[in-house]
Each structure stands twice: as structure tokens, then as C-alpha cells.
Length: 204
Image 1 (cartoon, rainbow, N blue to C red):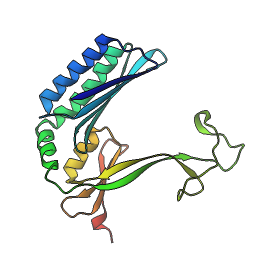
Image 2 (cartoon, helix red, strand yellow):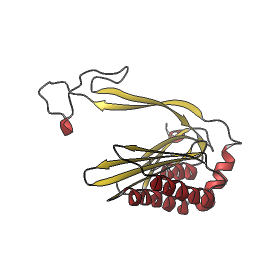
Image 3 (tube, helix red, strand yellow):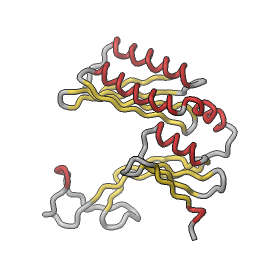
Image 4 (cartoon, rainbow, N blue to C red):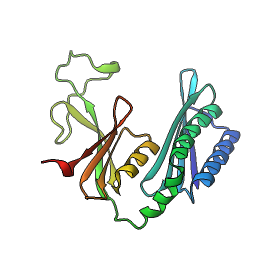
């Protein structure tokens, strides 16, 4: 597995890099036939360190964990434990799912946008001290501006597989095509802790 370790205003020691590589190799060997790559990013926020781990385990299968602690080693251990906890939940299904992906219909290409709220009045307060930005992107309307965009995929999945992917990637929402009816579906985390499911095939 290819592992990239980087820091934002954090000096990374050789001992920390070795600790990261060894720990991720253990997780990969324990839970996967093979994992493709992992990106680990350390940063510092006030008096503590944060760590963000993203593991690309198979096509479309991503795992994410975040951690924070008083030192970088402990922050990584916290993030790695979050990943391991999610993997334990789906241990029997992850490798089976990864192997099945290869024989499935390829996912649809899509584009993902990040929108920023904008303000109509120069004297209206912006949240968190953000600067006013009255510009809008194409087709976003008068109250939003595109600040980032990226390619993404809409995969063919069962509902349970979609929930698993959303949980492993620590995402709040996931759009997919239901493998049972090919309709666009969405699963998302509700504020009460449950999972919501929207199935467009039942509309009308």
C-alpha cells in the first residue's frame, strides 16, 4: 500500500512516519485482501494536534478517520481507531464488497460542488468573520457561489452497501443508483442518529 504522510505547520519525525506506516499495514493486512493507498495529514490547532486519515481500499471504497490529541502520535492512534471501529462493524462484508466491485457496471461520472453562502447587503454580518462575496457561480442563484468542484462517481449499490460506504467514509450523505431498480437513491444521516433513505423510483 502506498502511504503519503504530510503535515500542515507540523514537523514530522521519522519515528512518526514509521509508526503510521506500521499501523496502517496492520489494519490493511487484517481487514483487506489489499488496499491501494492511504493519505495521512497532520495539523495543529491551538494546543492540540489533529490527524486526518483517508484510505483508498478499492474502486469507490474509501475509509476516513479523524483524531485529535496533545501529541501527533496519539492523534494518529485516535484517527486509526475510528477507522478500525468502522471496519469491525463491517468486517465480513468489506472484502466481499471490494471483490464484487470489479465485476459490476462502471459507476456514472458526476461533478460535485462546494457552495458558499453570499450576502446581498454590504453591511450584513457574515458568519465567523468571513468576508463578503457577492459573486455567484453559474446556475447557483443569487445566494450561493461555487468555491470548489471535483469529479465524483455515482455507483450501482444496494441500500445496505450504500450505508456501509457512507459510514466507512464518514460522510453525511451518499447518492447512488439502486442496483435493484437503477433509480437514483440517497442515504443520509439524520439529526436523531438514524439513517434516512430517499428512493426516486417510488415517486409519482
